[in-house]
Length: 349
Image (cartoon, rainbow, N blue to C red):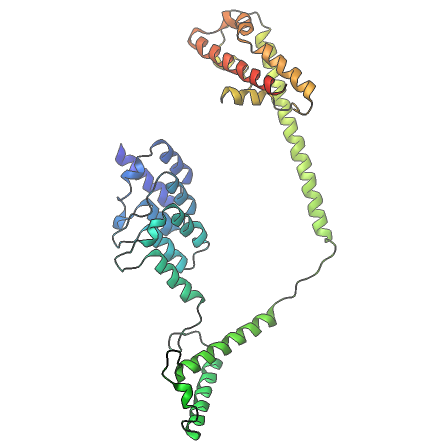
């Protein structure tokens, strides 16, 4: 039995069946412990969710006790895999996977894999590769031809100047703690020049914001359609609530006013305000469509419900017609429903 639930767990994770996964975890919480280390390459279901970028399934597993600190065959935790997804540029991988895992298990940030890397190391490496422009000429394959020509020209001019005026700037090449070599200086100038060019390009192609003082005709039409839709939805909801209330009152009139004792009443034959739910939810269902702000009408309706579902009066009207197999169930529910209406009446005073 446990093996079958374990296979279901992995199948739901692989196929993205989140609703079935939720039901399985809710009714069989121990299946997560059974399936923690049964995957390929010692992966857990949480590892697989991170590999598939399935944030909703990962959130379900975390909710029901999945351990983000468990390593796979390479020593990677689920947080390592989430950091790698961020490095690959996965859409919203940082907010959807990395942050929830880090909040759920902060200690996993200090776990090193077999390569000696923590999740933070992988994330910092990804950020440096993505955002830092301090790459050398050999490493920066995307460097433009104009930048390469400019750098060579700068080097040649500096060398010519140095040959013409030897040791004139000797103090600039000191070996102190804050010294800067000739290559470092040229590299810094190149970076500053490239950064300035990028800023100029951004300003050139940046579109000015359009100032609008009046909404467009199309926007006004969309707003009008939205208001009409809300009115229709409200009218439809009121119609549905009125229909439910009418059916409820007709059922009460039909069952409670009948004196036919030949037909026994089962639980489903009683005109409950709602066939399912707690007594409080049944009482709330009976009050649908009743405006609480009209205190007079609200109190009168509650008094009618109290008289209708009073246990003694209910037993007088329907006690002889109750089916024996449901008799105790019906009477207990009537008592609880009557108490719920009494509490609402007390609160309305």
